Image 1 (cartoon, rainbow, N blue to C red):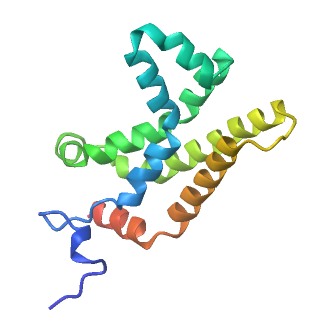
Image 2: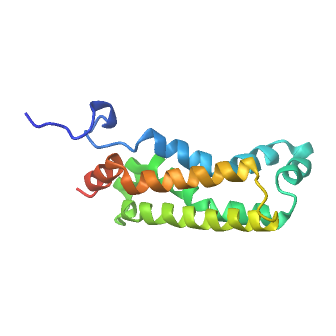
Image 3: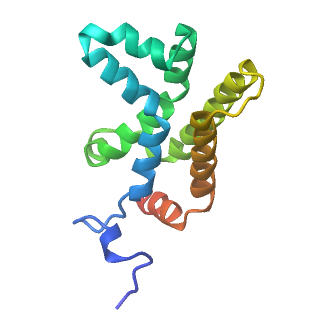
Length: 155
């Protein structure tokens, strides 16, 4: 009887390795700008006030939305993986780590620009973003679950 490399809860009904839950949480956490944007747009009366509270400069909002777009793309691909396997000939899962690294790098550049504009004063939210991006990077680089998942998806 073969031994599974991961616990049984890491597999779906077809025996294919599912993405780790921490990946979804970190993708959402690092896409918090999209969440804020969607909540602000959903409250029609206070949209501009909410956006100005979190993003005093409009260019900051658009740049943060642009650099976190790779995280949204990866989350959408992961959520629709079964449908995409059936309908596409492109091996999209090969590019997921590169897309996530692009999002991490671009987000760190924008956060660094924010810190530079603040004369490198400590800001808890920016510090939390940096820590979250770095932890995501370490997890992507060292996760056995992620490596096994991508290898399983290539079969």
